[in-house]
Image (cartoon, rainbow, N blue to C red):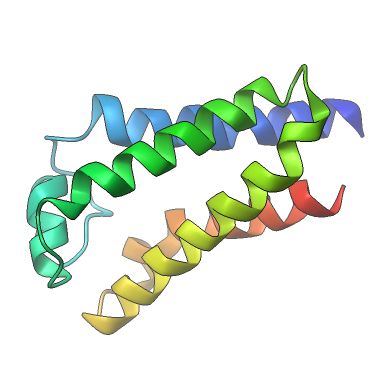
Length: 120
């Protein structure tokens, strides 16, 4: 069970950091609407572009806390719940603009993983 917990923490933490730090300005098949980068994605959702930095800060902070949870187990539950809430918000944004399931799959997958992490 410990190995599974570590794998899920790594997948979630590194996955979020990858999206927000390495792929921020890159086009992916999972961007909302027809956005080519993170700022365009927030515009597609009808959100202020300035909000991208607040959401990015929150998600990156939670991702780092999840990674730290490998060594400090007490961080996992609050970070997983917080990240789950962020993923639920992402799913709602995808639904609101009519994105297909493929575009919503990363957020949905991470929501499930965060639920598992909070539970175990």
